[in-house]
Length: 129
Image 1 (tube, rainbow, N blue to C red):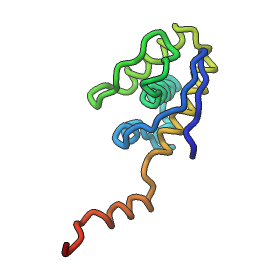
Image 2 (image 1 turned 30 degrees about the horizontal axis):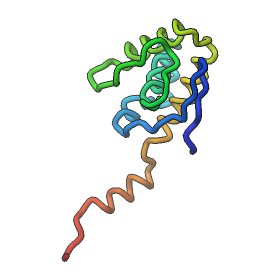
Image 3 (image 1 turned 90 degrees about the horizontal axis):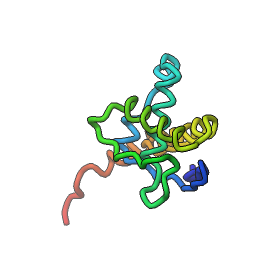
């Protein structure tokens, strides 16, 4: 999957890949998403947009979000980002669509079973030298 280019509120950026750790923190299975409130999903998607937005591109909201850390609750972090985007003039539908694309991009960066197996094959140092 090629990195999507998001155009939102007059800003344009090709999304960057999040770290595997960050993508795992965002990951939710279909069953979990099915039980989430809409607000939780919107916050998750806004978080994905923020962590994938390249640091060298103008942020579409009023204030660039601080860098996400593992101690920050994703729902609170994402809700603040979503509110900032709307307060900065982003249309609701535009914010939602950008969030969906960013979340899908973040999830595409997770290793798949074959990649994990290949990585495990390389986990031991070669013999001899």
